[in-house]
Image (cartoon, rainbow, N blue to C red; front, top):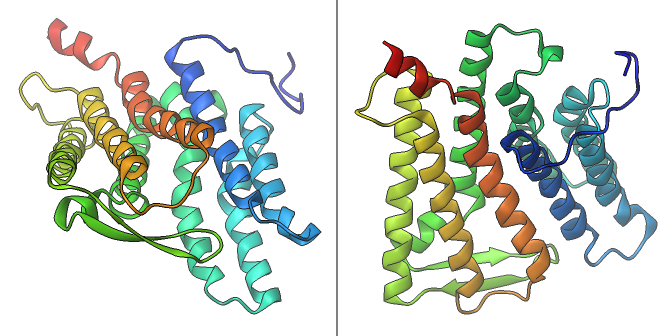
Length: 266
């Protein structure tokens, strides 16, 4: 296939790189579905269409798709917010920039995509920073893990701006506390081993990624079983959970897979 091709069909198998690509696509599938709920007019389908196009562009490796998604989605939100007089849309645009940027770039950074034009050292360092930004966002803002662990109760708001007070029993709250601790330890392990290059006993970067992903998996499970929550589509939630776990666990596994081998050789 020539370098000037408009897209490239990815290889689909059970390799870590392939599963990471599918996790990236799954994230956009979920956002497309969620934003299409309750759509009543043609304009309501603009965001679902944008997310669908973004996901497919990244999945098919369309040239400049990464920068287009990272900057294009937030820019579109700002324009729509100004046009409709919804000033809070600017906040959500910044939020989407922080979230979609890592989603767009992590698979390429992890696999060493040649189109990035980065040396391995620079690539892994940027991946470390991007992974930390994404994981911290997921743990402390996107998930309810902190509130579940601290209070056992939190408030959720759906796309119709309806509020739901969700709660856990004492056993589930204890599980949330363990998961939050696991997430913090995982982030620290990754920070020390991948970003700062320190040795932490036998721990490797992918150990930190696995711990953070496991914590988020537990957090999403607790969200599903909490009392007082909104109705949800199980299929979309399962896809989201699998995609989230893949995006957190797989990049360290792929990018730093040679770390253990090099350490043993030394």
